[in-house]
Length: 172
Image (cartoon, rainbow, N blue to C red):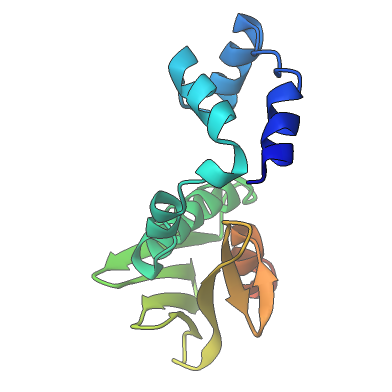
């Protein structure tokens, strides 16, 4: 950093610290508590203090696969709660090592979608074993873990919708 840039940085006004109400709101929103020292350290480091190693370590196929599984389980609970009464069908999640599946069970019908953890991707297949799509990961230059399907960035909910929408809404 040049002397001129150092002087400019030194002359910048200090950013006000969050009030205790703001801190409490932030803690509730993130589920994490931070100390005043942590806030000061983060503010002092700015963008150059980004902990890319920790963020990158959470962007692995096994961790994303587990997160996806937990979210799919919640989707299944929600979808089951929306069934008519009495329910004529049920959605279930089955778990196995490196794989989980969502099953649609009805009187004369059974369909499924399976998610498998492979070496370089998460594979999504229908009940015939035919590939629907693959999910790959990218850790981008902004420090975000991105899910990719067919060369398009997707959010977790979008991946789940791509995999489960037909099963949950058109398979009946």
